[in-house]
Image 1 (cartoon, protein in one colour):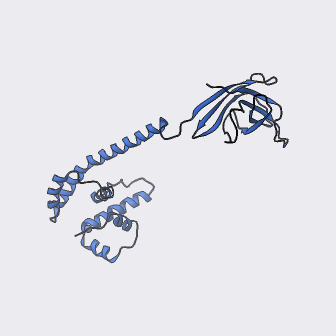
Image 2 (cartoon, protein in one colour):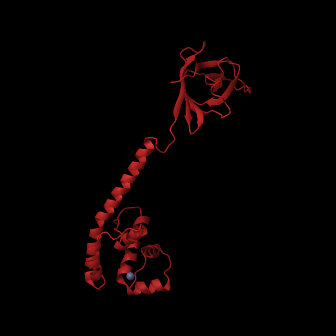
Image 3 (cartoon, helix red, strand yellow):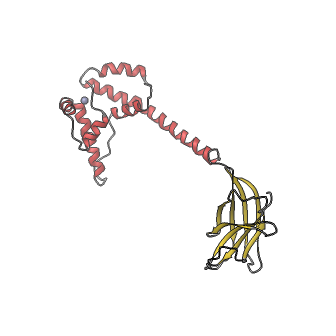
Length: 247
Ligand SMILES: [Zn+2]
């Protein structure tokens, strides 16, 4: 006799209507009634505030269904084959066999859980060592010095290449006014040309360099104090400035 799928038993326990065939099987099969009952108690325990009802161990066949989902081969084959023939005979002996099989499978579960933990650990290690995340190469760096009027201001800029694209990483130490904002610029060495990378929120930031910008020309990093005057150009009030060079 083939029993109810554990999924079906779980759905019935949650109040789904039973099909005629399932209803006939439940009337005839004490094992499946017991399984639905145990799921029902678990559902009640789950819906209650958590006090009172103990948590229940899922029936053996739930594990069997998980195992077949995972296409695992029968590990304890010899012992199981012997027990399966015992289990096919009705009565109390099948309960004994089922209990013994549960015991014999528990170590397999722990082996699988251990393997899963090991796989996660390996992926985490590869991730942390930069094996999956693209690695940023430092192309050049600049010490940023405070300009007159900004004594004590200092900073650092790194030009990085990651995945074929350049980006500038900024770290600024300066006491700045509450009003206005800070803007990061790339300048040519003679300051005849400049390009804005964006506004610096707080003291650190990372700015993508547009691919059209020739970094062999724009070698100076500049951070300016800007006012909200609607003028998109450089205010002329530089806080720090420095020239990029190979690290
Ligand atoms: Zn059954």
